[in-house]
Amino acid sequence: MKDDDGREEEGTSARVFRPGTTTAAGASLSLARAVAALLLWQGAIHFNVALAAACAFVFPARVAMLVLCTQLFSMLVPADGTSRFGRSIARFICKHGLGYFPVTLHVEHYEAFDPQGAYVFGYEPHSIMPFGAWALTEPASCMPLPKMKILTSSAAFYIPLMRQIWMWLGSVPATREIFCSHLADGYSCVVSPGGLRETLHMNPGLEVAFIKSRKVS
Image (cartoon, rainbow, N blue to C red; front, side, top):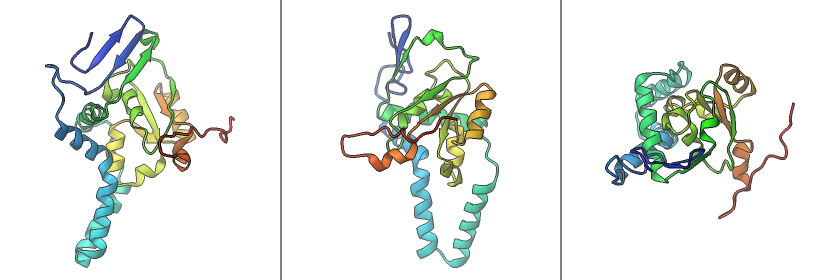
C-alpha cells in the first residue's frame, strides 16, 4: 500500500519510503521542481564561486567590496534554523530533491523507535555528498523521530546561503561537543564515520568506507 508521499508499507515491522517520487494522483513530480530543489540544496557553492569570480573580474571595485562585505556579514550573523519559512524550504527540498534520484529508505522494525528517544545512525558511504542521509531527517517525514540532526563538515557553515539552508535541513557542525550536546538534548543524530576523507579513495563504480583510523574514547 502506498500513500501520497510515495510511502509503501511492508508488513507490520518493515516499511519502505520513497519521498517525493509521486503526487497524490500518482503522477511523476515536476522535473523543474526537482532541479529547483537541488539548486537550493547544493547550488550555494557554485553561486558563491561565480559571485567571487564576478567580483574579481566583472564588478566595479565599489560593487565588489559591497558584495564581499555582505558575504562576510552573512557568514558571521547568527543563523536561525527553526523559522517557519525555513521549514517550508526544507520540506520542499526533501520532497523534490530526494525524489529526483530517487532515494529509497528501508526501515526495519519501524514501530520499535521511541519518538522521545535519541538514536545514533551511521551512514555509509559518504561519497561526494551523502544525499541519502537526508531521508532520515524530520523534513523528509520518513522516520517517527521528531528531533533529528545530521552532522556535517564544519566548513559548510562558513559558506554564505549554504549554512542557512543546511541548518533548515537539520544539519549541525560535526564536532564532538555539538554531537554530545544534541544527544543529551534528545536529538537523534546521523553521522558518516568515514567523513570527507572517503572521497580520496573513490574510484569509478567503487565506494570505500574509511573508518580504520577512528579512535574510540
